[in-house]
Image 1 (spheres, helix red, strand yellow):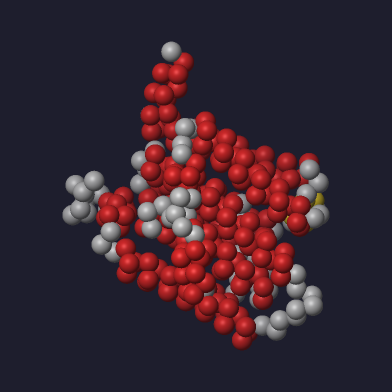
Image 2: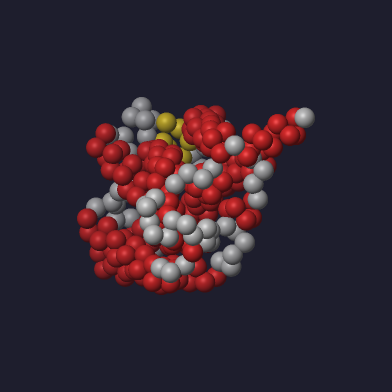
Amino acid sequence: MIKMLKKKLLQNKKILAIALITIVVIERFFRSSIDEFLGLITISTKGVYLFTNYYQYELYRIIWYFTIVLLATICLRLSIVGSLGLKNNFFKPFAFSLLVSLPMLLGYFTLATINFHKTDYIYIAVSSLVSAFGEEIYFRGFIFGTLFYRAKWGFIPAVLVSGVVFGIGHLYQTHDFISALGILLITFLGNAWFSWLFLITNRNIWLPIGMHFFMNFFWDSFALENGALGGWSSNIFRAITIILCTYFVYKKYKNSPQMIFFLKSIIPTHKYLKVK
């Protein structure tokens, strides 16, 4: 009786969406408190997060993401490998991500002076990889993927929810209202773009992970600006990378079922509405 009731509840799209959002809200609410309790961060009088040990924090962060996703996928009866997009080959998406990210590398190389002795490139690589892998699995594969594919929300509503949560997770990079709005905007747009890549490539999470990793790594390696917002000069090269990636992905998948599915989800009257 209990199993049948649980099955019916999980088949209810509204109940599934509410359960997912509840999990996400609880995770966001308790995250900073747990970080502080474990001694991984301290919060200054201005509300700025200060990390006590970078490597311990990155290890904890990847364990945290996987624990939340693992428990949630078990409770919601989702396929961890299939629903999160981990079944695909990672080499080609990573190679492609490196190629289209070269404008950032070359552009920042001309704008900044590299100090190999003072820059901890090992930590930057570890941090970039943890951020890319953990955040794409959690925000795109799990939150967006569940709302879009399982709860049958449209692209825009699913992106709104995952984008707000993703943006809130980056507010530690700022402590004033104007820059907070900028962070929320840039992270929301980034979330929408990564979600689009995940959808269009038929749930290949490795492409968003690859793009996220190389863009973060090149951005942080040259330290032109702090935080996700950045300045105009550095954002020009970031925009070029995004345009290149979008162009080649669109060119490859423009006639694919995924593109039709995407258009269906944002334009209800699209001519391919009847295509399953």
